[in-house]
Image (cartoon, rainbow, N blue to C red):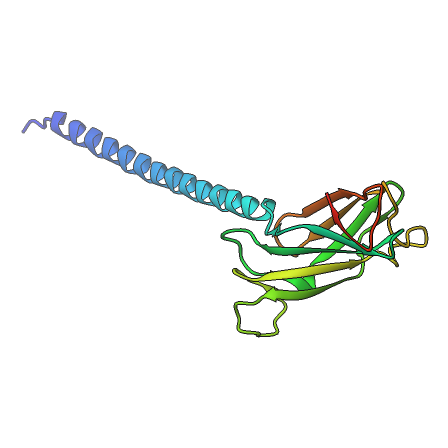
Length: 183
């Protein structure tokens, strides 16, 4: 009896071709899965970066200086959350002071809630719909600075624990009153 192996060779080729297709499909699935994972991580990084880079707080109203008529010893301003931001823990926030001669990374400051949506709940969070007045005491900024005089330029930076820094840069006018609006 004579054996014809032509059909068997075709069957072997079909099996090998199917194996190549299955292996290629598995590798492509792994590559696509890795690509989806990478793009998801990149999306997370972008969202986190935008959240941290944008300022969480904004100025509401004027920056006011108070003093004795010749030197400004206290500066006050009002803050609220920017739209869509998470509550800020004011206890973990820092205010720094810079002028032409010194830098103080953390100055003394106090806060008073002006508008409180919690119904008077005494928490330390600045939440949506709330406003807080910040009062910065300049009398102990450094041994060289006990206040600000006419034409002094300064910058305060409100640094929350999360979110971007809010810089407040002003110049003291030539004529100082006990209470003065700083531009």
